[in-house]
Amino acid sequence: MGQGQRQKVATSLAGAVTEEISAFLAPVDAELERRYPGDPGTRRPVHTVYVPGDVLAADTIRSWGEKALAALDEHAPDAASFAAVLGLSDELAEPVYDRVRAKLEHEPVEDLRIDFEDGYGPRPDAEEDEAAARAARLVAEAYEKGTAAPYMGIRVKCMEAAVRERGIRTLDVFLTGLMEDGGLPGGLLLTLPKVTYPEQVTALVRLLDAFERAHGLPAGRLGFEIQVETSQAVLAADGTATVARMIQAAEGRATGLHYGTFDYGACLGVSPAHQASDHPAADHAKAVMQVAAAGTGVRVSDGSTNVLPVGPTEKVHDAWRLHYGLTRRALARAYYQGWDMHPAHLPTRYAAVFAFYREGVEQTAARLARYAGRTGGDVMDEPATAQALSGHLLRGLDCGALDTAEVTRLTGLTRPALETFAAPRRGNLTASAP
Image 1 (cartoon, rainbow, N blue to C red):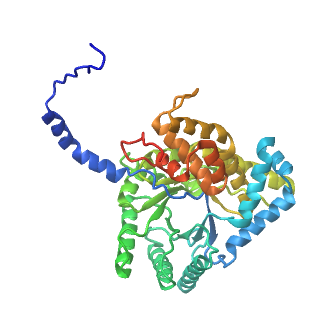
Image 2: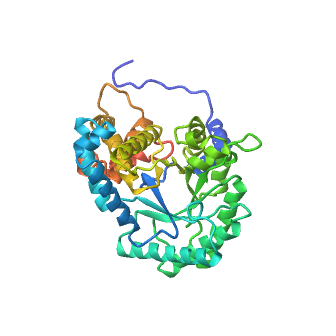
Image 3: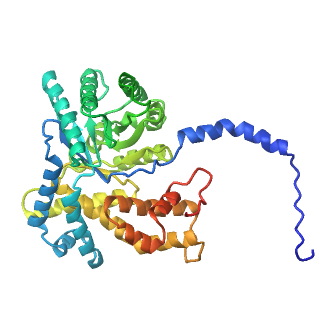
């Protein structure tokens, strides 16, 4: 073949064959788009802090930050002492400690859940009505004054018969209060606990739909998290994975699956001393949740530890090491969020998160830069890996573990470019950076 001549390409199938196959798979294409839209690409909080409805105050968020800083001042007043407790490397000690203190000063809580369930308990109806209305007012004022956490909302009682009406009424009072005080904030999150059947999810969908219609809100404006706290939520009586059916029952409103450490452990008969997020039963439940949620845009959150960092320094250090270890373990398993029960948990929550994203950031950024520039290296990355690399860096940026200028310098990519790699369109994982 002479230079400049093209190789002849032969085919055997008529175009009608491709058209027939495409027509056959059209319903599948539509189903993939509907069921698996991918991650929404929005900021993801690294934790959920929850406080009982009657404890919430206008200064709750600031108070948590101040108490967390006081715990640091008392039990780890400098980077070296904090690093010694947690086993941080010399390289990470100063940057992690400094970032933890800065975070506690400026944004101590990323996600606040006002609890009207287990942490609140049964109360007279008039008392819970008043607390729910007060919670709405305080949330609205926080957003108006700029003192709100990036995400805020409530956890109501579940859809079981004994507490169903109370949970519905509390949600109605809270949401109506927000509407009367200026409308629903952008960071609003709702949590439905102790879900056992998909029909309970459907019930909440219908409730939210009725509220939206009553106030002229766009359909689907209100989403919610599903808390997995029972064995039936993981495996149904017919052997199917209930969580997968729950996601579909939510009709696009589900935003998260949150693991309930202690209720789930108790449901399986795990003794109280062994109810923890690293118990094999917990690992199984979260693995099923993770697989069911993959690609759906629904995010999975780990639970909490009930070992509080209080008392003498030795006891606080033990609790810190436990919390730090559990958080790092969860992060390695791609559970990028968990629940915190005490202000003194915040230092180790952020230390674990910041260390996780800062460790090896140069290598992560270099791999993404090589992929974006189509240059060589000692690792052959796939498009899906580039997606994971950019998502990792974006999560680090959102929580404050990394700085924009730092990531841009290391990768040569702007944030919009990172977002392009992190959330490519289906079938186009080879998207180039702008």
